[in-house]
Image (cartoon, rainbow, N blue to C red; front, side, top):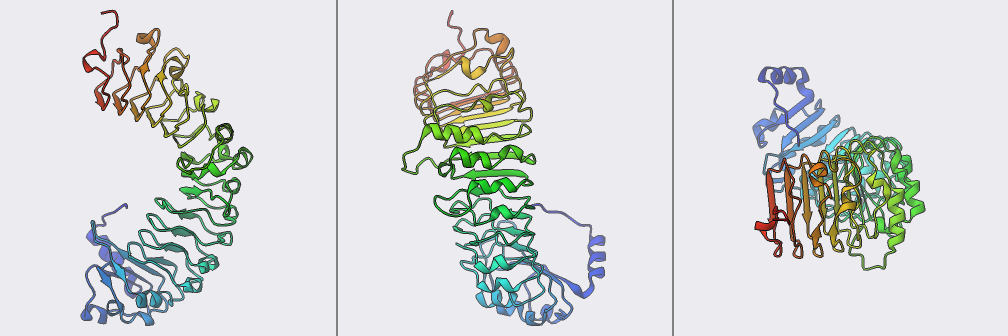
Length: 426
C-alpha cells in the first residue's frame, strides 16, 4: 500500500479547514477523547485498528447520521484485528456512508443489510475471512469501487452483479478459492479494473462476457480456461483490450478430466492479445504446440514471457525473434527433450534484447543445441542464466555469452560444470 508524508503545517491547515466534519484517531480512543467528538456534524473518520474493536470504542456513533467515510487503518506488521458484530451492525445503520472499509478485520460473514447503504461508492473488504458476498450488495447502484483483494476464503461474489452499472474497479487479486464470475458481469461496460476472470465449469459468467469489458486495464488473469472452447474464446475479443499491459492465461492442470490438446491449441489461437502487451504468462496449457502468434516479432513491447507447466508441449516456440524480450522463464515443460534451432528462430540476431533466461523443472531435457554460427547470433545481452532441476541435461551450454554476469545451476546431476563452456573441438 502506498504511503505519503504531509508536512506538519499542511496537516494542521487541513485539520483546521475540516473543522468538526473530519476526525482522525491516531491512538486508542478513551473517554476523554471520545467526549470531545461532535458526532452530529461528523462526516469523515479514520482510525488505527485495535486488536479487538468493540462497542465501547465507538460509543456515540448512533448520532453520526451524516457520516460519509468510515476508514480503519493498520500499522505495519500489525496482527489480525477483530470487529464485534454489534459495531458492524451499528456502522451499517449510518445511512449516508459513501466510503466504508472493513479491510484487515477477521470477519467471516457479512449481514444482508448492506443494501441499505444506497449512497455507498467505495467498499473495501480486502484481507477479511469472508466466503461469499451478501446478495444485497447488488442493490448498491452507486457503487464504484469494490475491493476483495487477499480474501483467501472467498468462493463467490454476489450472484448477479450486472445491476452495478457504475462499478469501475473490482479488485479480486489473490482470491484463490473463487469458483466463477457472477452473472451478467458483461453489463459493467465502464469497468476499468478486473485482475482475475474465473471461468466456471457449469454456471456463472462465460468468457464471452469479456467482449463488452473494453476498458479494463493494466492486468488480467483468465483462469479456468479448460472450461472454454475456441468459439467462446474468439468472442472474448482479447485482442481488442488495448489498455492491458499484463495478461495471464491459465489452465488448471490437475482437473482429472480428459482434455483435448487440439481444442486447447485452438483456444490459445483465439486468445491472441494486442501487440502492445508488455508481459505474458501462459500456465497449464495442454496443447502439443504453441500458436504462431506467440512467435510474431510485431510484439514490440513484450518484455517478459513465462511458459510454465505446459506438460504436453514437445517443442518450444521460436521466441528468439521477439525484438525487445528481456526476461524469459521456461518452467515445468516435462516433454521437452531438446532446445535447438527452432527455439532461436531465423533472424540475423536471436534474442537481441534478452537479459535473463531461466529453465526450471525440465525433467526430460537432454541437450541444448547451439546455433550453427553462435558467435554471430546468440544472446548478445544475456546477463543472467539459471538452470534448475534439469536432471537429464548433458553436454555443453552456449559458449558465446559476452554479457553474462551470473550463472546459476542447481540439481543438474549430469551437467559437468568444468565442461559447460568448453569447446567440443578442444
